[in-house]
Image (cartoon, rainbow, N blue to C red; front, side, top):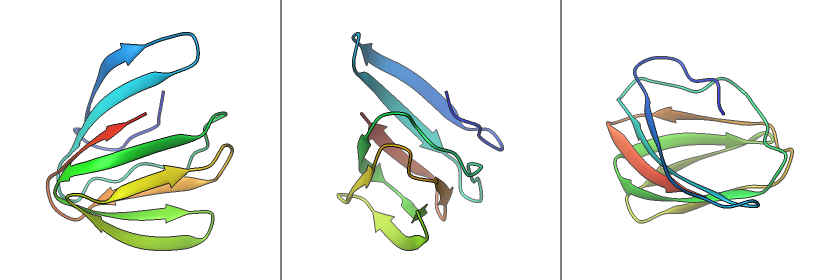
Length: 88
């Protein structure tokens, strides 16, 4: 589903014909490669801190923050601390 670097855990929690719910755990210092999805996705950070880059804009997200990756947006994420989020 996504090209990740390092010991990242991705667990599929639910699936339908048009939706996928993932639980992601990313250890500190781990980063995804730049990639795109053919659908919109959104997520909720459960714990940790991540640096998120979406189409040239960078932000720092922490527990309780929400993110959106628009369809076909080039993006990556890096765990600044051990981090866990739910992505839909």
